[in-house]
Length: 85
Image (cartoon, rainbow, N blue to C red; front, side):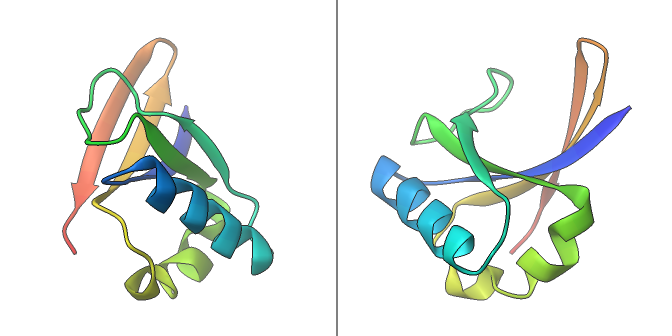
């Protein structure tokens, strides 16, 4: 089973700005399309691995994002857990 986190955004500018800000802090994050199971105002989201969640979560209050999800992927099945802000 694979587990990771995604952040969704209101617009593409927010997604790219967040990616740049987190990269500048040394976090290995990447922009991916929003999974088809989710809807978002922007078609892009930011993915990061579970091993850096604690470090990233410390700076989330300085990031403009819409939602944070934990994704559990098992084969072709995905389960999403939404975190409240």
